[in-house]
Length: 382
Image 1 (tube, rainbow, N blue to C red):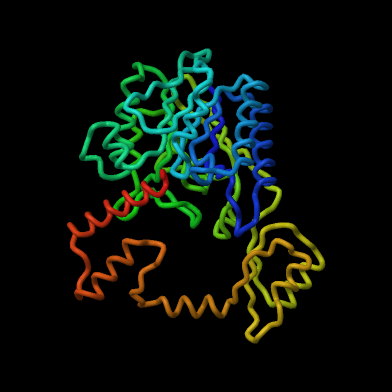
Image 2 (tube, rainbow, N blue to C red):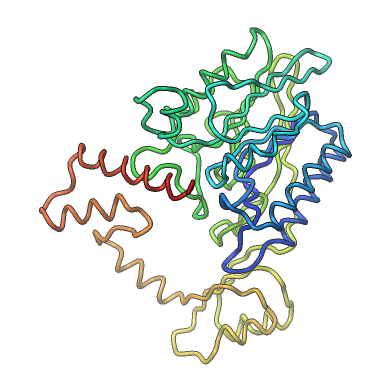
């Protein structure tokens, strides 16, 4: 059985205010070409198809055109799930007219997890598609008030899916989760506000391959058979050195597997360049580029319109910092107790410490975490 695994397209996303519409169109052409050349039995798209619950119409058209092309111009089956950036209902709407012998689309959580079963010359392979869902929707879906974190949600989903898996068959799971000890990047949104957002690799025991979405760097997660394909494009300058790829999986008759990384070739690379203004202006004049570029200047003194000069030949230079400022910020941060504003739990904990002289209690943090998670869920699905 041959499987092509990709995820985290984030259609409709921008990069530092720049549209990625043409970049995404090129990437989807490369996915289609990989399907045409490698003839996989199944294409898995492991969530975060869109960048937000209500994507722009151009993103929806791009996705719909791609899916129709795969269905009409190949024999490849399609398995796709909603991620934490997606609207489950929007993703599920694509399932209404789907060929259930060849397409498995999962949007909202469900206590009923029927798989897609594909036969090869060695027998059936069972594909379970487990979309992302928060704790509150999972409690209602599975009738279990004890569900309190992403690991509990996934455990309930896998338990429901396992009831549809016959004995002695190969089993493939697609899920959208943060597996313990995997490596995130700056561009992913947290799956839980406060508390533990990771799930153990052992949650997937019994599966022969686990096609994961959520983390943007291609990587294994605790085992060779549990893998993130990563995003096809870099969405932050911290991903500048990442080689983006799809994962082609060969699943043997005994459930063993081999993988191959099929590299993406984006229209524009993401790069960080460091040097003096004079050096970088000269380099840009010698080799103009349309890449997305972060500039780190090493000059000590004041400069006149540095970004304007650089953009003459680097039109997509999008971020400029000074090495001296970065060093100063690092020194200031050393020993500081100021919480990162990106983490509401740290801000609240510091507030308690400032007002009362000690941090919030475990019980208080639990109540705050649940309240923040509920507010986040309401915001995403409103």
